[in-house]
Structure formats: C-alpha cells, structure tokens
Image (tube, rainbow over all chains, first blue to last red; front, side):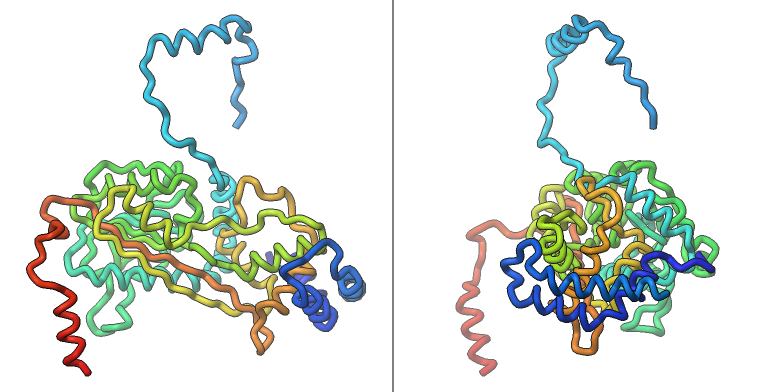
Length: 59
Length: 351
C-alpha cells in the first residue's frame, strides 16, 4: 500500500527509539524467566511505555 | 454462508422420534476417533488470498519457501527414475515448479532438475497465491497444470494416478493429517514415493516463548499466538499409519536473522502464515504485549550484532507406497552372518 504507513511500521519505528528501556525491561524478565508472574517488571515496563508513547506522539 | 436451519420448525415430538427410527433402520458403523479442528481453513484461505494480492510483497518473502522447495527437489533427484505424472500438494506459489526449472547446485551443467519430470499438477486451495506467478517465464520450461482445491483436506484425484507426490510447507495447516496422508497414499501408483516437508517441532520457538513471557508478565495469562506443530517422532507414526513403507524422516533447521520482531511478523503475514488457530484470541494482539515481547525477544534470544534469530525447523519425510515388487526386510532369524562379528572385524582393521 504505497503512500500510507502501516500501523505496524509506525509502531516499530517508535519502539526502535526506546531500545535502552526495552533492554532494561528484557533483562528484568530474563533475571527470573522461569517464574514470571503478572506485573513482575511493571516499573521497567512503564518506563518503556512512557518512552514509546513519547516517541509515537513525536511523529 | 447463511444456512437456514429447519430444525426449529420441526415439532419437538418428531425431532425426538426421528433419530430413534434411524438407529433402528440402519446398522451404522461406529465412527473413528473424533476429529477436532485446530486450524480454521477458511481463515487460512483468506490470509493466503490477501497476502497474494500484494504481489510484490508476497514475492519478496519467498526466500524461505524457495530454499525449502530447492532442498526438496534435491531429495527428489536422488531417486533415479522418470516421473511422468507428479502432484505438488499445497503448492503455495508453485515454488517447487520454479525450483524444478533451475539447474541443480550440485551439477549445474546437467540441465534443469525437472528433466525427468513429465507433467506437474500444482494443487492449492488459494487461487490468488496459486496463479500469482502464472505469467512468469519459468512456466514455459515445465509442463504445469494449476488446480484450485475446493477444500484443502480432500484430494479430488483418482487412485493410482501419480508417480510421485510432493508437498512443501503446507501440511502444517492441515487438521486431519492421517486422513490426508492416507488419501495421498491412495492417489499414488504402487511403489511410488511421497516426499513432503512441513514445519515442525520447535519452529519459531523464540517468538513463541517471548510472546508467552510477555503476556504472562503483562496480562497474567497466555493466549495462543503460534500453532501447535507436529514433532519428528509423530511424523514416522503418521506415515506408517497411512500405509507408507520404507520411511525416511529427517530434520533441518533454517535460522533467519531479522532486524526486529516486527519484521518477522510482517514477513510471516506476507507469506500468509499468520495465526489461524481456531481458539486464537480474536482481534489484534495487545500493544502492551507486543511492546514487551520485543524487549524479551532481544534479551532472551538476540544475537550479539543486534539482530533477532528465528528458527524454522523443517521435517522432511519420504514414504513409499507399498507394492509386491518392493524390497522387503528379511524375516527374523534368516541372517547368515553375525553382524557383531563383522563389525568387530572391520572396526579392528580400521584402527
């Protein structure tokens, strides 16, 4: 579909700008990935999401 | 798809009485094991049609199917006999046909791989995908007939028709594999091979695990995002159950590196290989889970150079339809030599 950015592309670009936060979140899960429970890394995820939302709006 | 049910208009008494009468009149054969549909064939068909409509994108993701079809063709070439009539079951975009027109990498000067193949019938349920490459020049180099299957699990072919049946990367979407393999066995001529390859076992385990971890952490539960796949162990049993002899099953891993998880998902979608499990969560995946999965994929499986590997595990299977002229194993106890003595003697010589 030329002339139109697909939502996934927009999403991917925004996430690409938050690689640092993403890595921190990934490490948090990796530290105990055999016993993952809900909101185990909520703090790290919220930082990642804030960064992503900011990057998404900037475009 | 609107079918009007007359059931509601039948008075309750008749409704109750009619099955009783039926059971008295006919001796019914007890049904076999109940068939549980795992994949939605209609949804799969729609995904393939949609993907193939975007011709350029669809062609750009043929790398996996072309490579697998090429490896499959090499296996076919190992069999030294002519194949006048061949079926390609679940042909996708006729990738096997294209690979057959190319020369083999092992012997580039011997001409195209398909020189021993007469007519190739390419059968596929998605019309758009099947005819996507119908105008390309390779079609002139091979006698190919494209046939749209009305249902991907029912083969409309006469028994004892084909000298070989090939199938590349489409059998992992079939619900009733034993039945399809049995139908393949019946359409083959006696002493003819079936050579197939399907996704199996640990394909895309990186994606599967990161999505599971992401959903577990974000939502506290796991939804189905990747298909259940057959394992290597299962395939041998399936082939045997379908009546094939002289089985060969082997496994091959292809690892593709992607820049990020979205590129992988986009490619899978463009291949028409999106999730089509009936019990999948309807609607798009939550953005939170997707955001989390990217980070987990990178931390858990990422390469050092920042790319993300995706493993495709391919199970190749070869089975022969039985025939009285086929070589059979000797009966137990008819051996004239002790293999233990033989191996000990020859093993000693090597040292």
